[in-house]
Each structure stands twice: as C-alpha cells, then as structure tokens.
Length: 383
Image (cartoon, rainbow, N blue to C red):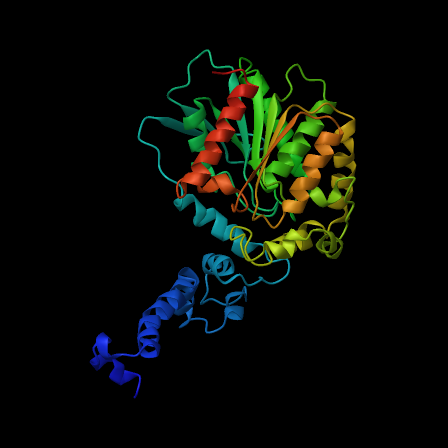
C-alpha cells in the first residue's frame, strides 16, 4: 500500500505500523520546521537576489551592498568579514541597535549631549524626572562593541532604562575606538569624563561605573587608573557585565595571541553555538584588530598587573553560562578575589553575552537588570 493511500483509510482499519507512520509525519515536519533558523533563512532569501553567497557581502567596493547590510549579514549569517574591516560592524551598531530599544514615556527622561571627553564626542547626560536636587549618586555607563565599534547611541536605550530604574543621573561616555586610537587613549577619555563630572557636578559624590563587554573592561581599567590619581572622590563601585577581550592579559593568563587563548579557554568553542550575541568568530575578529598593535597588549598587561597595587571599590561581575568568554570572566573574578577586592559574582543560567541588554525581550534579562539595580543601590547605601 502506498503512503499516499493511507490518507483514505480510516484509522480503525490501520495496523499499528501504519498508524505510527501516519501520526509521525506531522511531528517530524513540525520538528524540522522548529529547527530552522528563521531570521537567518529569511535574510538569506531576501538578500539572495543581490548576493547569492555570503562572501559577496564583504567587498567594500561593491555598490550593491550597503555597509549596514554587510553588518547585519555578519550577525545573521555568522560569517567573518574581511580582516581588519571594522566598518560593517560599526554601521550595524550605529544604525540597527538604537532602533531596538524601547522609547521612554515623554517627560520622564531628559537626554542631553555633553562635550566630554572631547569636543567631538557624543557623550550623553541622562536625567530622570524622578531625580531630586539632593541626589548624590550617579552612574557612569560605558558602551560595548569589542573596543572597535559602538557609540553612546548604540546603548542609549539601556542607559535611559538604567536612569529610569535607578532614579539617578547617568553619564554615558563616548570614547575613542581601536584601531584609530589605542586602548590607553580610550581609557584616558573615560578618566577625563570622570574628572569633568566631578568639576561640573560636585554634589555627586557616589559615582559608579557600569559597562558591558568592552565597556566592562574599560570600566575596570579606568578604575585602576583613577586609583593612581589624587582625587577627592574615587569610584564607589563597579558593575562589570560580560567582561570582554582584555582578560587574556590578567597575570594568571598572560596570553598574547588568539591561538594561545583558544587552547586554554574551552568555552570559546563550547558555547559558540549558544552565544548569539557574540556571533560567529567575532571574538577572533576583534582580537585580530585590537592586538595587532603591541602598545595595546603592553598596556593591558601593565595595567591588569596593578590589581594588587590599588584598592579597587566593590565589584559586581555578571555573566551568562552561555558566554563564549566565560573563561575570561572566571579568571577576572579569581584575580579580584585573590587581591581581596570585594566582589560579587552572578552567573545566569543559559544566558548569553551582555545578557541584561535584552531586558525588553525576556523576563530573565529584566530580572537580571533588577538584581543589578539592587546591588548598586546597596553600594550607595540608597534605599
């Protein structure tokens, strides 16, 4: 009997084998459809007319493909761009991510562009309407982007949400990017912004850093640098979420090449299928650009060796269990504990890189952001 003829036979006339076959077909079809990566499939279909293969997304001189399309293709197709070509990812982070975040209700948040740390910067001063004149707390937010991409506009929605939930002003700092600048210059931009904040808002005395990915690394490096300066007010606390590239140069790691790190960081490969935010070979791509300058490697090695020389403030370090950089996060937590820095570590099950950035889309991410808020308020002795 043919398979097609089964459709005309009533179930009470089927033998057990035929019934099992007939009822299994829909289950197999549904399972197969559920395994398809629909965003990636649709993207391939839409752009297939212009670029039949993903390699065609990358020629920079191809007028048919915009930089934004190449950036989106990278995220969705998980294919590496040409070596040292940072423009696709920069364009994607500049124009795509700002449209993902929610818009706060009118009148609840005021966002102003402030000239710090450089005249050409786009740092943001974000004040919630709930903030009183007696407020002494302020959060300094540093965006991510692997040190090579991102702007304050990229994570503007997150910074606004932090201001709304905390009820305190937020300074979202614009810093220079690699390869046009060095990591040291980027960190000096953050330090300069801190000094500007102290000069222009002297009543703010409880200042905390918060950064995700590269922003977490720059927050840590800025805090180390600020401990060396003669300041009346130093950072109160640090929130380091998914610390990004740079942790390879902790004293316990001392890896100068991607290859060395890949041999010791098992989660780079183990979590690659799960960490959608760190798509494809983004880590390898970033480090190939950042570490090609010996000055960056030397600076990271030098500064991260100073964890024992300065008293860092209390730290909250967070990560998702699906992070490809989870080994680097663990190495940082171990280093902080070894140097007796007060540190709280939270690892969220089956969450990915920069997990709380998805607060608008998943309740788990929103809950993680609430826990972060509670910890910050406690560090400020704020009820």
